[in-house]
Image (cartoon, rainbow, N blue to C red; front, side):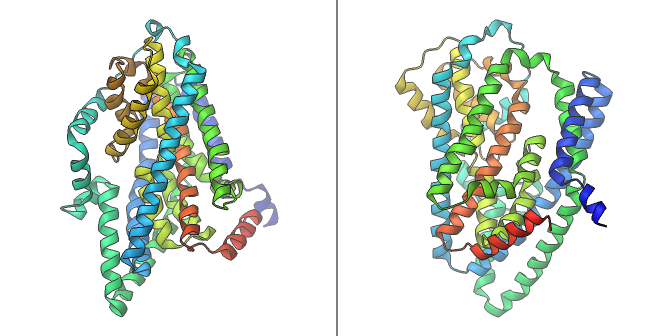
Length: 426
């Protein structure tokens, strides 16, 4: 038994092996439509498995967490505190992206005529409808007319809204409500068990998804935009390991210990370019790490809509990159306007498929960049999406612990026990 444990690969290493195999398969089957279709279907099946378990976990954990909290004033305070934190961090990410683009000038090294465009038709309809929807439409969309329809669409905000109300209603029943919380606790435990089973297929799903990306793009198509990709990843790394580290120190969070705990979820989010892929295990681990169920089940799902630091960095970098490529000289006033527009637009696009690219579609016109410019970076969107998704996952884990500590809802003794058992591989 000891030998088996010694030679057993961790999930993180299995996913990395899947990543490498996916790159190899993608290169072997470059532009092979039959092979790409097979890999696409396998990858889609894995993402569907994840999506299948996300909402039951969110609903059960959030309802029980709010029911245990039972105080609407406390909930309001946590909600306000969480949204303010999210807004500050995403605004900081946008500003850093703008500053890096001004210092490095990645667009000036590009001849726009040498770039090959890709179709963006799947994003234009979303951007058009989102432009005309306005803030009121977004706010109204939070309230579900049919919770089952919202669940069927995977709309996270209406589900969160309903779960919060359901949890408060459950708390108001007193002893009668215990039946509901016991049932939902059991549901959550079952879904976490299912999550562990689904995660065993992650290396296969990752291999297929990466294989599709490489098989469709190849490496040759990346050369003209290699500098932009490099700068984007360097900026994201700076934000994670410098900015988030400093924020963690301010709030007495051991950032690198936290990162060690979520490294598998970080790798999974990176390789699948899907935040949902990491959400179930993130919620489980943050509770095991010491944050209360109420905080975890509220902050993480909300953060997946509002706390998108990686996306904010990419959007600001890409907007200035395209402006520089088209030789559009933006004044300080125009760049400040861009920051404000990105702040508002990114929140207004919450829940829209391909939100990061849709935000760019709705934003670049304000700085005079032709819509055609976005077709030139559409081909690498999936590759950059991997990085920004991983950053989003780290940002939401840090936010959860910070909010938990600020509310005295963090058990440090539990953290020590979990870290010790995690190091042993229990």
